[in-house]
Length: 491
Image 1 (spheres, one colour):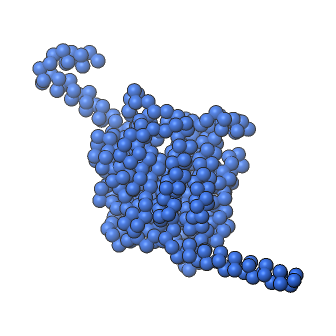
Image 2 (image 1 turned 90 degrees about the vertical axis):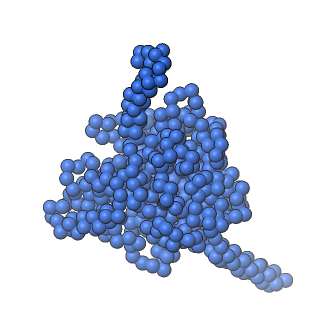
Image 3 (image 1 turned 90 degrees about the horizontal axis):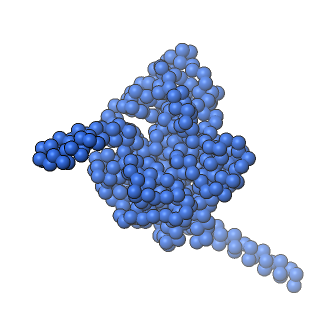
């Protein structure tokens, strides 16, 4: 009897293994769900998987362990808006003049992402995906730029570059919209409690609602972007950090990490985690103090890189960047060659079987064959950056040689990153030929770029206010209402 029992047990185990293998096989051949999670102004060194000792990110660490860590993961710009424009279009944002953060102005139908750009969520939507955008948009505040009109079935969040984490106050000056109401699709919306938690809860609900369909979710947190705000109980958990700003920052990252855990739990609850392709990255490096701007620091660390948000050095554009897709990608892997955010769009469109031929053509690389071992080597010959219409620039080749003209340097520099990851030793004088060749590549790439078509948000508000300061009194005088003119002149 014992022999039969043993045989029966082994037979059941065998069938279980076959069934599990079949399940994984089926998952790998069906359209995966796709999630892109983006942090805002997060320092490279502020996750456990990038070496943080004082900030706890167990959920991000598990996502990293379950798939691939990109050791050279980059974004296409060191500022929020342009970086997001590159990510969602799958093209260098310089091709369509989106080279600075746009001002928040719901009445301006010009300052936003070019209507002729086909964002990759629209390509996924055409391929049968339900598409959702939750959180920060920052690609234009007028109706024409609302995510619902740019390829998303669902939107909950805010259209500007940031938001207060605890309140909405419509009695205050609009400025950059930090106290304006949120939007759900095309209707006004609010939130309760802490904004990061509200966004996470909405994302988990999006998963619940769309569990039976292939879906794409773009979860764009504004954490840990300013203002530096976090619940008191979460700040208290980091009492061991001496610096108050870093303490609040740590709490902001912690709450975001827990929210990401809630989204993953929703996937696991419905058995769809295995066949979900999940990316996480930051939109740029963490802001750092600099001469003349000592208060810029948001509490972040970009160790071991030089510079931060706004720099062409790695501190501005080299970000925490991971991928997880258990049905296709084995656990515990690292990828050494340079990749960037444009590859997320190309990979998502590729695995979804969406249209890659529609104009304008995306510029990233589908990373899937590199991740599965079908292809070897580096996906890119070089990566490129540009700021201020070319006054600042950078180019990085696949071997890690970087030629850069940064805003904080008086002249171009050359670095060999494999043995100088902190960009501390300029070797341009020793390798002038390398520098010339890299600049030739950059110049050729730059020929397809156009001038920036946006004003910086500070300059935009300045000239708008100056215009109305002059125009309103003039219009009042021409209208023949002296009392109005007197009142305006008095002010």
